[in-house]
Image 1 (cartoon, one colour):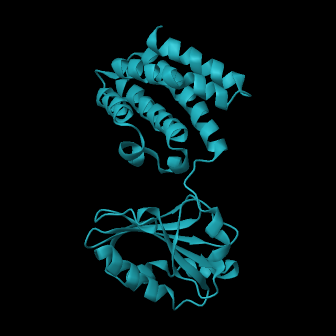
Image 2: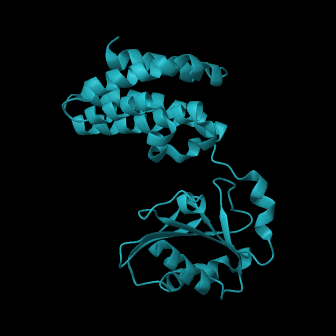
Image 3: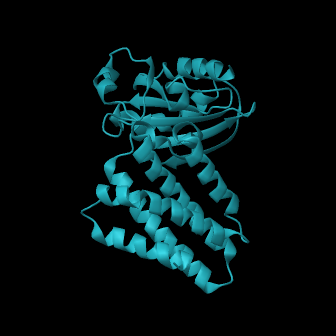
Length: 257
């Protein structure tokens, strides 16, 4: 696979940096669950005092494989450069320090001369954190409310369906947290593999209705799905009566029932 060639060449270049303590993979390649379409999620653990200097040289290291034709920077969990090579292979290079390294997902170590990653082996996981699950429930209620407001306005079906997409991203995360908790952080891309065929088909049917002309049918199906999970959701966030009450109200309002 071309991913292997790219990884080998980029890692060889990164090893020349004295500030690099460890290089490792996460994502589907790091878990050995990849295919020929998978992105490369490459991580560099660097000395904190040299991080700023290292960031300026990342593109040089990435081009040890091929010319980068499109790239940009982001900061989600750490400084990240997102790039696409001339052969259309995508790669994300994350720069972390011991302070910013998050113990999510499984990793595959490629370079670690001082074995600094050993201390993180026992804490590898793919479980959505409990506080993020609670946020998903809150967000689901909020975006149902925003959907209702868009429908009330009466002239913006495009905004309405976008609100339902937000609802579904949160609802599917909630379902994964219940039915596939140990891998629930994977999100939408894992739905076909982690939910039952019936659940997958229900989700797919809803997405097929999230259109300007069918969104009322979509919200009806969403409400049925949420109602089926409601007793369990209530048992998980029993100390947040406000969110539960608002969610139940929004289901009724959105479906006029």
